[in-house]
Length: 151
Image 1: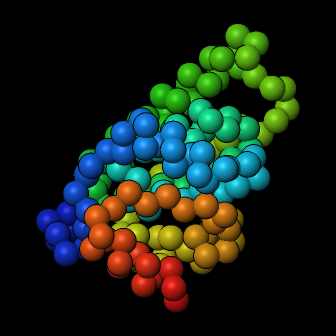
Image 2 (image 1 turned 30 degrees about the vertical axis):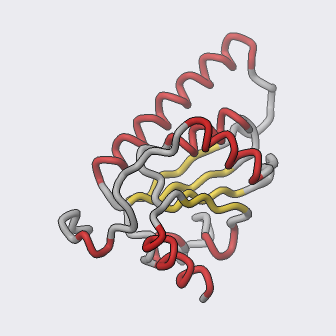
Protein backbone atom coordinates (compact mmCIF):
# COMPACT_ATOMS: atom_id res chain seq x y z
CA UNK A 1 0.00 0.00 0.00
CA UNK A 2 1.23 3.46 -0.84
CA UNK A 3 1.29 6.11 1.83
CA UNK A 4 0.49 9.36 0.03
CA UNK A 5 1.76 11.30 3.04
CA UNK A 6 5.32 10.06 2.44
CA UNK A 7 6.68 13.02 0.48
CA UNK A 8 10.15 11.45 0.18
CA UNK A 9 8.86 9.07 -2.51
CA UNK A 10 7.28 11.82 -4.60
CA UNK A 11 9.42 12.74 -7.57
CA UNK A 12 7.67 16.07 -8.20
CA UNK A 13 4.53 17.97 -7.34
CA UNK A 14 1.70 17.79 -9.86
CA UNK A 15 2.54 20.25 -12.59
CA UNK A 16 0.58 19.43 -15.76
CA UNK A 17 2.43 19.47 -19.05
CA UNK A 18 1.01 22.26 -21.20
CA UNK A 19 -0.43 21.38 -24.61
CA UNK A 20 2.43 23.08 -26.46
CA UNK A 21 5.06 21.08 -24.54
CA UNK A 22 3.09 17.87 -25.17
CA UNK A 23 3.09 18.56 -28.91
CA UNK A 24 6.84 19.25 -28.91
CA UNK A 25 7.51 16.06 -26.91
CA UNK A 26 5.39 13.97 -29.28
CA UNK A 27 7.24 15.39 -32.28
CA UNK A 28 10.61 14.65 -30.64
CA UNK A 29 9.57 11.11 -29.71
CA UNK A 30 8.43 10.36 -33.30
CA UNK A 31 6.18 7.59 -32.05
CA UNK A 32 5.12 4.82 -34.42
CA UNK A 33 2.25 2.35 -34.23
CA UNK A 34 4.49 -0.38 -32.79
CA UNK A 35 5.91 1.73 -29.94
CA UNK A 36 5.46 1.25 -26.21
CA UNK A 37 5.40 4.58 -24.38
CA UNK A 38 5.94 4.84 -20.62
CA UNK A 39 5.02 8.07 -18.81
CA UNK A 40 6.71 8.01 -15.41
CA UNK A 41 4.75 10.31 -13.14
CA UNK A 42 1.79 10.51 -15.51
CA UNK A 43 -0.38 12.70 -13.27
CA UNK A 44 -3.86 12.93 -14.74
CA UNK A 45 -2.85 11.07 -17.92
CA UNK A 46 -3.08 14.05 -20.27
CA UNK A 47 0.16 13.29 -22.15
CA UNK A 48 -0.83 9.67 -22.73
CA UNK A 49 -4.26 10.73 -23.97
CA UNK A 50 -2.60 13.21 -26.34
CA UNK A 51 -0.30 10.44 -27.60
CA UNK A 52 -3.29 8.19 -28.33
CA UNK A 53 -5.03 11.02 -30.16
CA UNK A 54 -1.81 11.46 -32.16
CA UNK A 55 -1.49 7.72 -32.91
CA UNK A 56 -4.93 6.10 -32.47
CA UNK A 57 -3.91 2.61 -33.66
CA UNK A 58 -1.17 0.25 -32.47
CA UNK A 59 0.49 2.37 -29.77
CA UNK A 60 0.72 0.90 -26.26
CA UNK A 61 1.05 3.28 -23.31
CA UNK A 62 1.72 2.77 -19.62
CA UNK A 63 1.38 5.59 -17.12
CA UNK A 64 2.73 5.26 -13.59
CA UNK A 65 1.48 7.65 -10.93
CA UNK A 66 2.14 7.78 -7.19
CA UNK A 67 -0.83 9.89 -6.09
CA UNK A 68 -4.08 7.92 -5.96
CA UNK A 69 -6.18 11.01 -6.70
CA UNK A 70 -4.36 11.51 -10.01
CA UNK A 71 -4.53 7.79 -10.80
CA UNK A 72 -8.32 8.09 -10.57
CA UNK A 73 -8.30 11.19 -12.76
CA UNK A 74 -6.04 9.50 -15.31
CA UNK A 75 -8.24 6.40 -15.46
CA UNK A 76 -11.30 8.62 -15.91
CA UNK A 77 -9.57 10.55 -18.71
CA UNK A 78 -8.64 7.29 -20.44
CA UNK A 79 -12.20 5.96 -20.11
CA UNK A 80 -13.60 9.22 -21.56
CA UNK A 81 -11.12 9.11 -24.44
CA UNK A 82 -11.96 5.46 -25.16
CA UNK A 83 -15.65 6.35 -25.26
CA UNK A 84 -14.92 9.23 -27.62
CA UNK A 85 -12.85 7.01 -29.92
CA UNK A 86 -15.51 4.27 -29.85
CA UNK A 87 -18.15 6.81 -30.87
CA UNK A 88 -15.96 8.02 -33.76
CA UNK A 89 -15.46 4.43 -34.92
CA UNK A 90 -19.18 3.76 -34.77
CA UNK A 91 -19.77 6.91 -36.82
CA UNK A 92 -17.46 5.59 -39.54
CA UNK A 93 -14.22 7.23 -38.47
CA UNK A 94 -12.48 3.98 -37.47
CA UNK A 95 -9.93 2.05 -39.46
CA UNK A 96 -11.57 -1.36 -39.59
CA UNK A 97 -9.61 -4.17 -37.99
CA UNK A 98 -6.61 -2.18 -36.78
CA UNK A 99 -5.75 -2.60 -33.10
CA UNK A 100 -6.74 0.54 -31.24
CA UNK A 101 -4.01 2.14 -29.15
CA UNK A 102 -4.27 1.40 -25.42
CA UNK A 103 -3.36 3.10 -22.17
CA UNK A 104 -2.74 1.29 -18.89
CA UNK A 105 -2.52 3.38 -15.72
CA UNK A 106 -0.59 1.89 -12.78
CA UNK A 107 -0.79 3.18 -9.22
CA UNK A 108 2.60 3.03 -7.60
CA UNK A 109 6.04 4.40 -7.03
CA UNK A 110 8.06 4.80 -10.23
CA UNK A 111 11.14 3.76 -8.26
CA UNK A 112 9.52 0.42 -7.37
CA UNK A 113 10.69 -2.19 -9.89
CA UNK A 114 7.55 -4.32 -9.50
CA UNK A 115 5.46 -1.36 -10.74
CA UNK A 116 7.53 -0.46 -13.79
CA UNK A 117 8.64 -3.99 -14.66
CA UNK A 118 6.15 -6.57 -13.37
CA UNK A 119 7.35 -10.16 -13.38
CA UNK A 120 4.35 -11.23 -15.43
CA UNK A 121 5.27 -11.53 -19.11
CA UNK A 122 1.73 -10.45 -20.04
CA UNK A 123 2.31 -7.00 -18.50
CA UNK A 124 4.38 -4.40 -20.28
CA UNK A 125 7.77 -3.79 -18.66
CA UNK A 126 9.79 -0.60 -18.77
CA UNK A 127 13.03 -2.54 -19.21
CA UNK A 128 11.79 -5.18 -21.64
CA UNK A 129 9.19 -3.36 -23.74
CA UNK A 130 9.54 0.42 -23.59
CA UNK A 131 10.60 2.11 -26.81
CA UNK A 132 9.88 5.64 -25.51
CA UNK A 133 9.83 7.24 -22.07
CA UNK A 134 8.28 10.57 -21.12
CA UNK A 135 9.24 12.39 -17.92
CA UNK A 136 8.07 15.81 -16.81
CA UNK A 137 9.81 16.09 -13.45
CA UNK A 138 11.90 18.45 -11.39
CA UNK A 139 15.71 17.96 -11.50
CA UNK A 140 15.71 16.04 -8.19
CA UNK A 141 13.15 13.59 -9.54
CA UNK A 142 14.97 13.26 -12.85
CA UNK A 143 18.20 12.33 -11.01
CA UNK A 144 16.41 9.59 -9.06
CA UNK A 145 14.82 8.14 -12.20
CA UNK A 146 18.13 8.37 -14.07
CA UNK A 147 19.75 6.17 -11.41
CA UNK A 148 16.95 3.63 -11.86
CA UNK A 149 17.28 3.61 -15.64
CA UNK A 150 21.07 3.26 -15.54
CA UNK A 151 20.84 -0.05 -13.65
